[in-house]
Image (cartoon, rainbow, N blue to C red; front, side):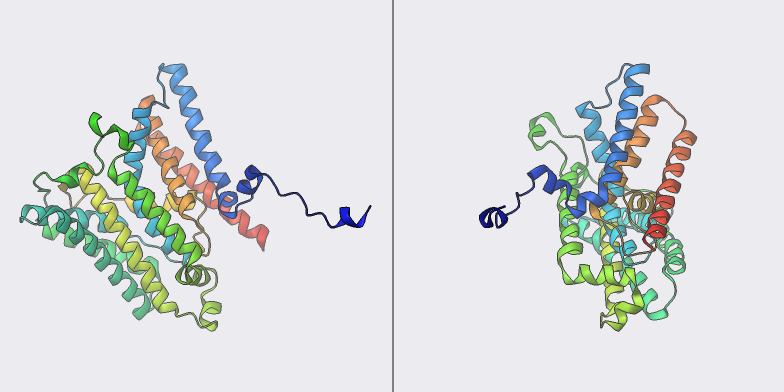
Length: 340
């Protein structure tokens, strides 16, 4: 072999191969394959038994609109779980945000100010969780279990144990089906907002110092502390972000229901946590991605939509969803065992 041949640069891999080699895509191939498998399964079943097209554009838009609430909250839950925490108060915070927004609108506040009030309520709940966890040094499971009941009680008290009707505003259109003259938008504004915030959170986790600190705290809190990372401040920031995104999910919930419901979103925190876990997040901390969480939320909504269109009872959907969560957690433990 000549010297010239020996110094020739290695051929660059093709674009498709470079894309598949991306760490982000590699980590989410399993969740993406699961979403594709569930989608194809219901496409075949509905076509064979009912003559329906599951991939109908209207059905796809409906699935995206219904996924937005869980996926929005899952953005914050991803940050919390990556940091090694947990937040059981998400459903209660969502309910509180809808009550605050509806009450503000009924009091005559402009829609934008009412929306900000809902987000502020979420931030306040996140601050409460973060301060209790960092100051009292109590495990997040216990703290957020307590604040779940506390926040739900506050929501019921503000609403006097009943739904709050609010005047119609542009907030009602965030997740509404697009009218014909706005079909060029493809998706409602709430879905586009989800995409934008998912991009921002993904960038925060991957390319900022705070993101690196969040992964470090979730991977090994003691080692992170020894490396000089301000663990309490990172945890407080994590729960502030979790509260903010729960408030944003409350805004989406209000847009969908158009009322403030203090009993709404009951149990939704389990769907949010499940979306993160199905998408590859580890309850041990140190692992998780925004793309995986959104895919996990889509898997759960495709299951719900498919079961509903097949006419299956709710208990079948609950069994299937529970089985998928158990399998996702088992695979997570298996990965950790192999890595050890």
